[in-house]
Length: 150
Image 1 (cartoon, rainbow, N blue to C red):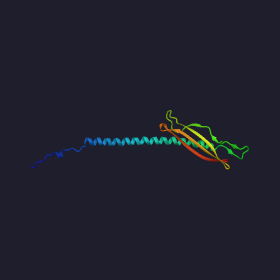
Image 2 (image 1 turned 180 degrees about the vertical axis):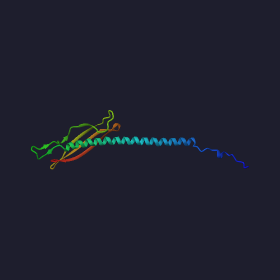
Image 3 (image 1 turned 60 degrees about the vertical axis):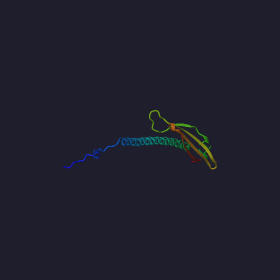
Image 4 (image 1 turned 90 degrees about the horizontal axis):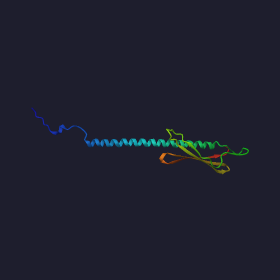
């Protein structure tokens, strides 16, 4: 008969040590918290983009109203509905999804400036000012030029 040696080497079980388990949990926690922070940042940026696009839409709407104003120098008497100077300030609701009472408002400032009398050219500037929570106040600005009889 052959005698078997019972040394301690063959009896070790294949398992993780406590340090390895704790380290794996810490790495997993860092990864999960990083994914959650990234998701929250992406959601905030998407919401900011929605606010900015809604404000831009309001500014374009006001710009189109000034482009639709009649300015005909050849009529008798001449018609100029596009008066130079500041126009009435409007406060409007941003067109974003609303849940409860989180209605967001924007303020439109429209200014018309005479650039040239001959040829008649005016500059129309629309500033749409809106607030995004605690991140501050933002402004969308559109500027265009308009000639008479268009």
